[in-house]
View (cartoon, rainbow, N blue to C red):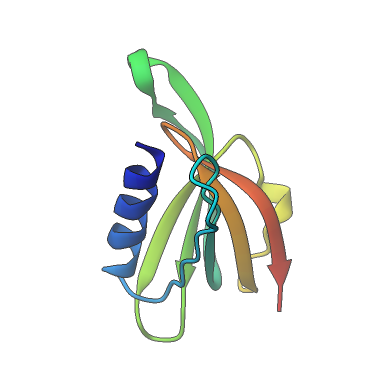
Length: 106
């Protein structure tokens, strides 16, 4: 199921262009890697499983002129992002949002 969710996420984001995905070979903990220029950083709530409110940090990425992609990171991770910077993020998928593992700039 996790592999299916990761694949669906990868397909939806690659359809917009401008992102690169890499998954490790561990089937229980797929790590996805995405790179792009951070254009939007927004903290908000979304409706999760069981109609619960989940706090997420919405990040919109742009890579060159090939399009935009949006990711919902679990919790408030705004302080880890810098608008206008090129970032590479590693994360895992949960049911309602993605869990940030690492971020590098440059």
